[in-house]
Length: 219
Image (cartoon, one colour):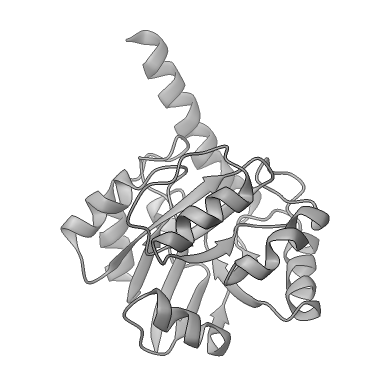
């Protein structure tokens, strides 16, 4: 089976300092087969990583909408932030992307969702993220898993890695796939391998945000 990381970031995200080459090195060292790079509202880091290692890297994007965050794989055209969820999904569907929903019930993040808003888009997405290693409270992931079962929607899991050492903490083992259509067909047969990331992991993204803000102000 193919071990797949669905959710990770590079220095193209405002809260990460991870160079694509370091992300790739960590993934290869850990024996991960495919890595979906999902930077915040940009695919520049994913494209840079894919140019280095096209066999490993899938271009993705984590997109902030007016209601919460969407997590996409096989993105060919960058989607801007702060569109209505339906518009974001429409633009992703037009390019054939695989569409999931980031940490849907994480109440501590700006990108969390209200259940009523999530229900509105549920028929339009391929999956929701049922386990995110960086959810600080177990009940956030538990609620996502129960929601997926209740509404018979497929689930993805991800490390939400903002530093290279985090990549691969939560993976899905999938049958072989070569594109978004095949991923849609096999996703329900995926086997999750998950590991929680303790709160201190968030210090890496906090530090990255502070450093980028400081550097910007001192230019």
